Image (cartoon, rainbow over all chains, first blue to last red; front, side, top):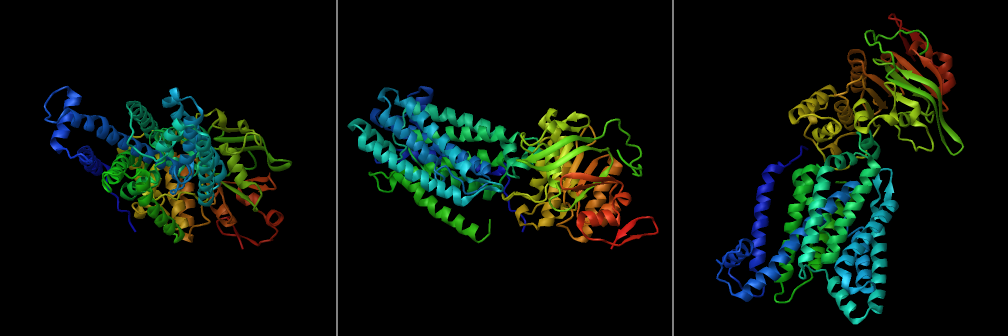
Length: 343
Length: 273
């Protein structure tokens, strides 16, 4: 069977187009009905300091302070999770690796929970992302050490490690909520719901900056990551300094997942589903896979968030529920295919 | 080096051997896996690395590429063109020392062309030049006809030829004559492909001055194609030299525990029965 690949050049523009449409849809939709064009014009106003929009002041607040930050955060977090998922699948040499499934997100969540409950409230905007990153890093190292074998990583051990770490994190987070004071308890439960709704300006800047760093570093190392898929010895024969590379990748994915979890809670399966979809379209070459995964990841999470906001409007579902509801069956299909030896 | 210089690599005289190994000891715990006093491979030579299973052939390859743990081995004792392996810059080393693995772990759905293209990683080639190098290597290894197929759907022998093409690309811009290590390049191939690969190896050595060291199991192939034989037993090089001198009935019996019958052809070659 010959490969049916789409050239990446012909995909980028249409995908970006879809992304823009999703953004417009996201800004215009919500419990309060706002006209689409006027909403977009008010964004234009905000950026360029003009007064063209006919929206009322309170409507502008809805667009600027509620919907736009949420939309941007969805794009950033989705792109971040998709990139980290793609790279994890690369370093683990295992297409089933995902920050959520293998427990890295749980570890990051545990770190964030400790920061919320135990550390001083005043510095939480810094301690939560940092502890979340530290938790993610420790977990990645632990999982990688456990699952590593000669031919890559063992799926069974990856999944079991994920189960164990998720259980452990849940237990400690349960304990933390037991000892937490009222304020911390409220912060913790709000954060745990995994939502993009509470995006602060600092969150956006932090996530945006981390996404830029992650994308630049990954893109520079995309070829080395391709070589790593051949096996560590083969990559070394191709002149790649494998140990150094792996450490850099593990560090950067932990930063990416840690920041994503700290701003939006645990949002599963984006890192698994998106790289798979993109690989089906353009193949596994990371030089094209990574940037396209960022676009598709941002779009998919925005779409999931739109679903979460509008399905039972004015009530809202946590977006993590939506991604899990769609992603888990996808994961089962992948497992089934693997069992059939189709992958 | 040893014995009579009967090889056909006239025109590739170098002061330093392409690859030299001196006082190399590899041990795990108290067990010595490999103990080599002196070994050298000249440019332009096709060398068969022979020995029973567990004799240390693959360990020797790993020692040459510097893959063994630093505690177990002193890689500084292996030199490529007179310079210790550990002193080569990784990318430069990759352009001069290539390894064809026996099997690969690649499980992602790359096309064959993409896998061969991975050989470009240590090179500096423009897009069009890269495409040309990839196409050339695929032609040499008889893999052009499945350039667009998915690698993971190929047979073991086809996959190995794809990797051979990848390694040929990797070594295609070497400034000094490169060294290519082949780990059982013929074991997964059918008869025609076996001879095609060995002919290719011979041409690379005799026409382009490469040094190829191949782990082989078929002694007839070693006798027919190779300029030199390195014979390993229990981690030591017990014989080295031209195949006709090394591969005698008594030595074969000593190493493999089977006494063959050797027949001389009219061309003076030995054939094993």
